[in-house]
Image (cartoon, rainbow, N blue to C red; front, side, top):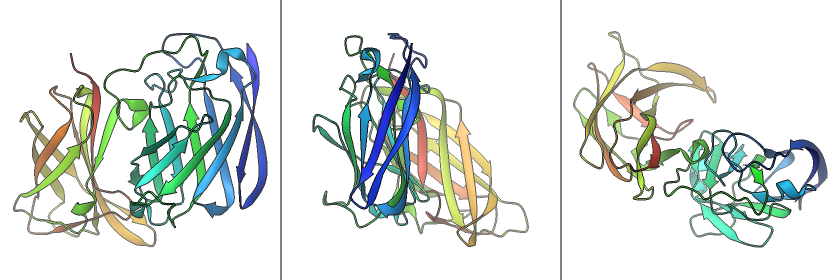
Length: 306
């Protein structure tokens, strides 16, 4: 069955734009990518809030819930691009057509904010979805975005699937991204420095799905003898692990920065809680953590504990 879904995107500062998306509805009740609905609007002027008006005409597609794009059932994702000071946006507010409002702490990558939730699993999809950028006090942020995206799977309202006990905040709910903005400005050297990341996932979450990954960005690092970062870590269950990565340079927003990405195969145990990494460089040079593009992040694959 093929259905045309009309998506009207509106803001107070811009005329209505209408996009038509083809949605194939199978009415399936299991995993896969039976139904997908993605709504993107590039605003002519940056906004701190945006409204998507959704009109799904097929009875097989009227509720949020199909597990699409490798997501868990009911996972809804919002991206906001072009936020100049993304670190000053504390929450993304998502209001459904029945006026249920959920505030989600986003994670950041440069000018991109991403938030995910399963709070709307089984909710009617039709109507107005309102996305707002909020500051730490819960008020509308002075920051604005140039592109707003909302994405979720669609399913029949009488075939809604239950969500698992463990829900991540990224990769369709199968990964948890823990940020520590306070690490920006920390200097790493050949002497180990302790880095901490708090994975604020449910206690039902254990480490699964293939990896634990550390992502750090630094002011440009120069060394004549090579540039390697190592970290000896402990999970919340005090399970030891080891990370190592070679650093690399990229040109970002008019300046050179140095980055490192290190990962290790998943090893089980609880995901929720404090992760500690004793981190050092491999020589007589220093590396100062920044957050110009990447914020300091630990990414953990998560799923229900066995």
